[in-house]
Amino acid sequence: MAGITADNLVPGMIAKALARGFPAGWAHSGGDFAAWQGRARQIAERHILPDPALLDVPCGWRDDATEDRGTHVAHQGAILLQGGGEWPALMLRPKGSGPHPAALLLHDHGSEFRIGKEKCIRPLDDAALAQAWVERFFDGVWIGDRLAAQGFVTLCVDALNWGTRQGNGYDAQQALACNLMQLGTSPAGVMAAEDVAAAGFLAGLPQVDAARVCAVGFSLGGFRAWQVAALSPHICAAVSAGWMASLPGLAVAGNNHLRGQSAYWMTHPGLHAHLDLPDLAGLAAPKPLYVEVGVQDRLFPPPAVDAAYDQLRAIWGAAGASQELALDRPDGDHAFGLARQDAAFDWLLGRLDMGSTGVEIC
Image (cartoon, rainbow, N blue to C red; front, side):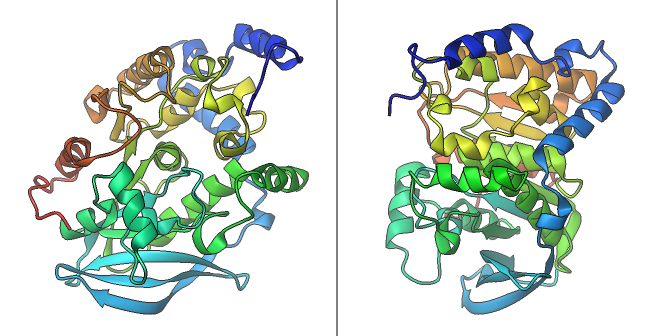
């Protein structure tokens, strides 16, 4: 896919937009963190979240199958919606009444739409495709099962266009985006709103400690993790693996972010006339946030990551919470293997006063 090239109008418009900058971003805040965050949150919610009249509201859970996994029980089922629909999901619940900490797991994109929730939690039925996926990106470990063995309730929901909500493939993403934009929203906006709703559903479960609900994701899921931490009052901390950059560093020839298709899930129409990507993540401050991007990750040019990290440090510093921000640049490419999981989850467990990840790998 050629993407954006010099023979059309858009590169000139990109140059003008980048020269304009992000007038509502932290760089133009004057240093008043609380005032900036309040204004920026209003802008973000206006440009991201769909009209509530378009959205379904979770109202319950249906179990379709269960499986004992030793330290915890796996549940295959669905979040039920007030409008009569449902979001198929997998949930792992530690044995015992709790209340337990919880992790909302946000699955990746990967141009693999046949599975969604199964990328994070081992399925109860045929696991061959999911097994190949976790071998490729997670050193063979389902991160949801790993966290459940550590005492977390873990939940992963099929996002619109994945798994049991699968659409019509890679090239059909633009048609989905067109349809949603005609309704006044976008794929990224629907995904953000559903993630916020799932966070509220998880926090409301009787077995869950509502003060210790975190978000964890890789790749597109990493984007979703810091985004839901920014937008949801129910998320207390987030781990984002394999997704952080400043938009000007992504808006360069050949970058995947300019090719369309998968980028629809990370593009909020109108938002970037006001805020950069790390500005959006900064709405989560002063919550604990762990971000990592591999040094050899070709999706994220080093200048884009460096600029975002500098901005995140400035925002968390202004919030008086520098100690709650961890920014890592591990050796490696676009993956979240065991060593990188160890670093991220040890940090998370420390923030939740839960010790370390020295448990048997599921």
